[in-house]
Length: 114
Length: 112
Image (tube, rainbow over the protein chains, first blue to last red):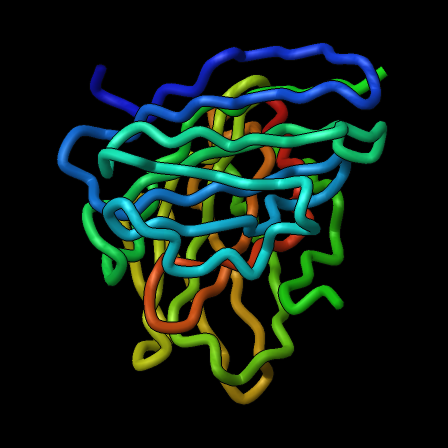
């Protein structure tokens, strides 16, 4: 596709369960970012990949959160032992390279932990 | 600690008039500033940006002004159109898009 694609668009899970959120960036974009947007807030940075490696994971809130990008394209954000406070919209973005400041966002995955 | 602040949660403007959205920041290391527009159930869409070496950038109906001494930037939309109704986020970065700091957004409503 032409834009950043995120699946699923909505995910409802029970507290304590494991979830995976997928991001398919724009073809050819080497930089990929995950953000989290809670209700009434702006997006907050979680992690950034340059190619296959996580160049900056300083935004991950704790060790329950992990992300991978094994082939330098699709990325998966993994959340273990989900908590109700993890409920938010998880946004993925990509850019041509890290110094290109125009990041293109996907539509997000709305995660609800019940 | 909110490094980018948008103190007006909402703004209503008549169609054809000017919309002015404001943003303040605290980190003097920010060297790039961006505005994103967001419609419901969609991701943010890049609108316009400005480097810290400039004080103005214009793109059609959209102009961003940067006042570094005041750590303040603003987005002007002239003339405002109903299709501009959305949430506008101000964002800032250091050295590129690898870590964007966002404000909390301003919901703009343009009244026909």
